[in-house]
Image 1 (cartoon, rainbow over the protein chains, first blue to last red):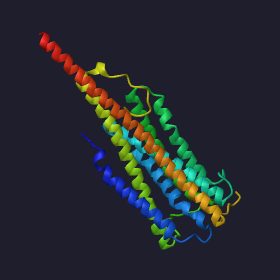
Image 2 (tube, rainbow over the protein chains, first blue to last red; image 1 turned 60 degrees about the vertical axis):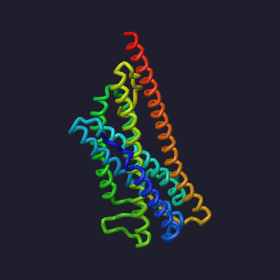
Image 3 (cartoon, rainbow over the protein chains, first blue to last red; image 1 turned 30 degrees about the horizontal axis):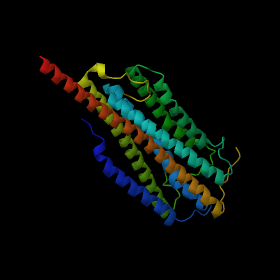
Image 4 (cartoon, rainbow over the protein chains, first blue to last red; image 1 turned 90 degrees about the vertical axis):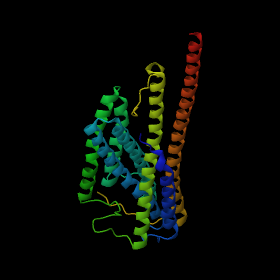
Length: 242
Length: 68
């Protein structure tokens, strides 16, 4: 039997320590940006949220491959939770990015900025994942269609990212480049620790939700085993795997 | 495309925006944890129900055994 809760305590403590360290460094160690000033501190939150969110969507697609290969429902649940978490992080990235844009550009949203719009497209694409699941009643079909969606949409994420990077005109500030970025060492160190902290937060919350879903499924399986199928209340229609 | 230039804002204004962004992040995490806690309570309730139903079933089985 798989148990997700066992590693949760240690993982939570490491996550809290890393995030605390990252934001302590962001405010007390990393220097203020010469051009942007104090407002640049938002980047230590916004950029890791955006990166982890995009990686989470790809991770969801990879887990969905596991379902299509094996037919094991556990892969579908893992993929569902990965996409669900990535969507929450994506919304966080959009809101924190908007706050930065308002302070720095004077607008909450700029429609002719390719990075912003492409990120919004990815988030909106994955926002249709849950309604799509909800619209399919049969659990087997729901899992299969959702896996195909997760793989195709997951493959779209890096393509979308590369297309925006190749675009000639962009004004979105770049934190990471293939040449290593243009951050001074103290800022780069803080940024990478913040990225690690947000990644750990994603992994912790993913494990937390998997533990909760696993516990619920174990309760249902135990009820079925001990009291028979008649004792089972009919499942409510749900987007979540059951 | 008109170029957008990121400008430095005065510290007292920047602090409000930075605090706002971090508060939003904290709020998202807390709302998520609260929703998960609610679901956990539901699972606990289901476990209590399961235990009660099992006890009732055992009591019924004993009654049947005695009657036989």
